Length: 495
Ligand code: NAD
Image (cartoon, rainbow, N blue to C red; front, side, top):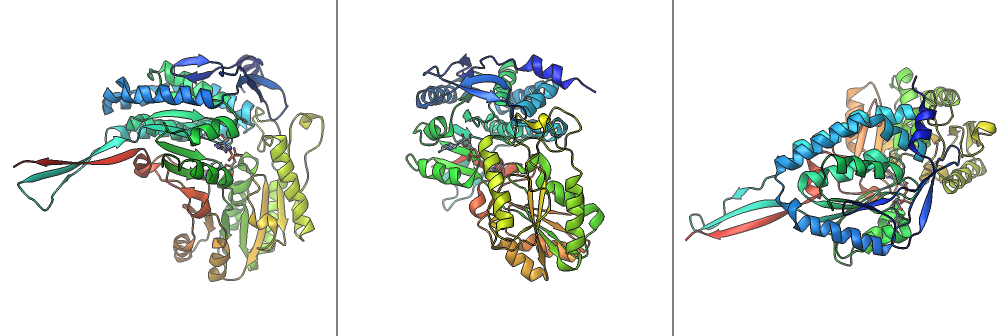
């Protein structure tokens, strides 16, 4: 087994890590810094610049200069080759990238390591997409006199703002389509997890990314993030984060009517029908929430179970939850790591109190993890609430923590109506051995993704995103390329 502790000490020693603008590694203009701390221990990993509006200006100017300059002359084949070189570098440095993420945001190392297929797949998928961009020749009302055709052009400077819960996949899913289409990027990582994104910029630079094509401004959402969202030099904002922040970004983007795509929060339903394969469904339904300590946008946090099997199923999910190993992310046997911050831990603790106050029954968990090993961080026992009703707060609001609310149902029509009765529409799960039931539910649920007899699958080739207040726009698939392209019509008088 690898000595992750030794590798961790070699990776971060508390020193300063600069941000990345126009191919240069720099401080913020104010000289201010923010701490990057390990959420499992509270230990200082590094300090990073606290960028502000002036730094965003400099990054946008660099991105514009690159967009209008030599980068615009790169052929699709050259951009493809660059993405493939980046993929190779990622593969070579994969363990370090994962370790960095585990230290900076707490995800168990066995989970970050397992994401390689998805992330390397993204880089290679968009490398393939780079050479497929094309317009059409379109017959018009003046045959023989006027020739009309379309070309697809990159939208320009893209402002990307990401959350802390999946920095590697989250940033690559914003940067790779930009490189594929010929856009340039100013990316603001979360103030809770900037370090791996800086490492990614270094890897991309070493792979031959030209200056200004990718710029990273570290800083607070309310300062650097807000400056980027309202910047008149930005043509498009791609955002992943909470619904409340997404709303403020959409408002800020109206200044120059920049295009916006939003990947936001959720309160996703998982429906277990009475004909489900219980043995297989229990661990999947449990990990639909407990993976990454519940800090996942697609968490299937409303567990609807057919009344005939409800009690047994929920008991087994609770048993499964109670046996999960809680620990530090760099321990390979850890199933559930820490919560990202004291603020997020307070939020979760609040919901753990509200649940029983409103009448929910604690089937397992419900408390923080105590003990010497857990003192520097914030850890929670995975929690299953039984006896939940649709009106309860824990059944309505996104908790972003390891909490399942179990709710019985009596008929498919009823459960569809209840599952859809939420402002969100990110994802849904269905467990049934009946093909017709699975199909019917998959079509009737209002969500961007529906998984049947599985959960969590995300692939670069398959579109992902939300409906309703979970956002708009898609990442993944050919649809994703559309988000970074404009269509221009060209008319030629041939007479
Ligand atoms: P958040 O909205 O607090 O922050 C996300 C990013 O926005 C951070 O970089 C932050 O600095 C920045 N930000 C904050 N205020 C801003 C402002 N006024 N203007 C511009 N930028 C601002 O979210 P979080 O706590 O980092 O992440 C958790 C949330 O993200 C959850 O709601 C989760 O569901 C959602 N999420 C969604 C997806 C998805 O694909 N749909 C994926 C991961 C997380």
